[in-house]
Structure formats: structure tokens, C-alpha cells
Length: 334
Image 1 (cartoon, helix red, strand yellow):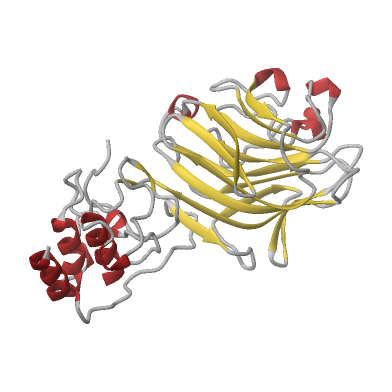
Image 2 (image 1 turned 90 degrees about the vertical axis):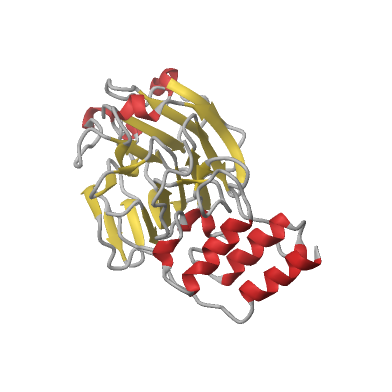
């Protein structure tokens, strides 16, 4: 143990350098909109607008439909994580709701106008998967309650907002009125939906089958009908593509001393010497620093020097939950 501790000290002392920060372009596999002032990389359709700092899908007016897609398709079927803060106002008495949506059909896809507000702006789009934040009880769509979360797809066929086509839903959630934070993730089998920090729905779905491949446009839809409410996105981040086994910087499917040394090598050469920089980012802050080497060594030596544990996903193959520019030059996970 003494020899290992000595090696730890020799290879790490005195080197602290920050190399890399996150992207904000929707053309990449990762992007981050802390707000939407001057936002680029998005296609706004129907009544969707950027108003000040927010991305407004619909104003509080009757018979509105707003749809937003990324300009470019991004990787989704092999795994992604997205987090967004949304605002529905007023908190009650309005209609109809909004969705997080993915589709490979068209960069200008919109739902059928004939579907009205209950169609939530997506009804009729083929090759589409949505997570509904449905805020009104539409009997003609067989909605279970006036506040339910539901996952819908028609696979290659046109999608339907009718609840009989839902892959899974829940009404055991907070009222969507007001401001909330949602995180939606996919790791190749299940779509997992978190609301305000709590997992509220897990639904199995084959996204590659829906989209006919790995890529899709991602964004939001919303609609009003005879009653109205504002649907707005306040912030949005998205990350997909690289699946990492966190801590395995050299890509040999193990966490060893070699991984810490691989991270430390950037201080003598450059970041390109690390086979998988994303996996080497052991604290998941979007940077490669000496702290990452500390965490890997701490993992090896049972918390040596009181280092925190390696960030998820550690010990299994999973999508990086945080948008950043770090990438893998090798296939770390199957």
C-alpha cells in the first residue's frame, strides 16, 4: 500500500489544468441551452416563438399549435439523456398540454390540424415517439385524467394521441401547472422519465425500430383548443452518442492503474492521448483534470485520500448523463 501511495503522489502532485467545456450547438451530439436568448440550431414551427429568454410553444390563446425541432438529427437509439425545465401557466383551468418529442420523418413535421388541442401538436406524425405532459381531460382521446404523463408511438405508422395507443402512463404525479424539471433518458431498452427528481415512468421501447435507425430530430410540441394555457421551455440540455464505462479511460473494460495514468498523460502530451476522454472524466464535470485521476485511484484503493466515488455510469455501460464535448476514440461499450 505504501508503494502504491507513493506512486499516486509522484504522478499527480502539482498538476491542475482545465482543458475543455461544453458545447451549445444543436448540430453536435450534445448541446445546452441555459436559456434561449439568441438561440440557434432550432426549427420553430406554427405558433412557437423565442420570447426573451424562453422558448414558447404556445401563448395563452385558443387554438394554437407550436412545434420545435433540432435543425439536425442527433443520436438517440443507442442512448441519450435530456433535461429541460418547462412552464405551463396558468396552473389550472387551461388546456391542453405539451410533449417532449423525437421523430425521423421530417425536419418540419407537425401534427394534424384536425386533431385540435387534444392532439398536442404531434398526432399524425409517423416514426415518432413522444412523452406527453397532458394537462386536460379529453374524453374523445380516452384520457385517464386531466393531468397525466404518457409515452406514445405509432412506430412507422402515424402517431396518435389517443390513450389506447399509449405504451405506458401515470397520473400519480404533481400538477403540471407551474414550473417543473423533467429528465428523460434511454439506454437501449427503456425510456425513463423523471419529474422534479423522481422517476415516475419507465417504458420499454425500441427506438431504432421506430426511427429506422439511430438518428432523429428531437424537440417539443404543444397545443391549445377551446381552452388555453402557455407552454414554455425555460432551459434544455441534451447528450447522446458515446456510451461509457466511467473510469475506463484506456478502453480495456476494466478500471486499473493504467486508466489514471492515461488521464495524467494529457499533462505531458495532449488530450488525444486518452483513448476515451469521456470515460476518463471520472467526476463528470466535462473536463479532464487531475481530479479525475484522483477519483480513479481512489476507486482502486478503497477511497484513498477520501476521494469521492467515480460518477455514473461506473461498473456498467451507459450513456453519459451530462452534455459535454469529451468523446471516445474507441468503442468502449457494446
